[in-house]
Length: 293
Image (cartoon, rainbow, N blue to C red; front, top):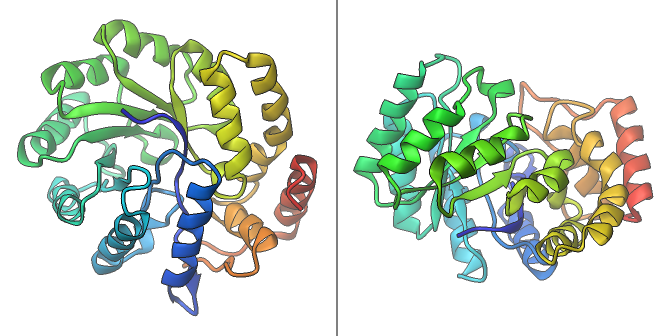
């Protein structure tokens, strides 16, 4: 079971190519500062602009360099079921601990289509699945009834969810509909505090890329039911949570990382572009507020 602060890692680029050296340094820094698991090739990892070979190499490097220190939840989602299964097969071969699988995007499957998609993956791969619901990006919402049906169909395969629906009531919907332990992870940094209070056990986080220690301390305070301390840390991080989306993600977090470390670039791939000046000012102010500069 996964819990705590789990960064959705950026994929560093240098001169148009995957910057493997910077990625390895990022992994070490995350683990040293308390991150409890790592997610390569999620949305923040720009998986949609990676070739299949690059996608698989990023996961391979993450698993290899992590070397069992924390679990690796490999981003394997696609709008094509066969491609998602291919990513899962490679991730299993490399030794990933689970697959993060987003709802298929663009083609807008029905709830029946979602059940068929995730059932096919669960039936054809041994890798545990963490569902990823982010309707703001995919246009497709994995509704609570569908989540509960999938988990009850595959109790040993579909083990958790990253929920970025923005609907906090779903934490309780899932908990009551499933009726047993199920790993619920917030997909929205700014909602992690109330999500944890409702029964979530951690966050797959954008902010943790640049503030791993604070995010880990925040999650630990929640585990200890010290919500006064959790609120104090959350207040430090709150402007940063929002600054991470002042421009198209992951441009702000890559810019923030380049401000904190000189070994990582803010380079992105088209159609994403570098942070605008207003976004940079917001990130700088948020970093300063959090005490990270």
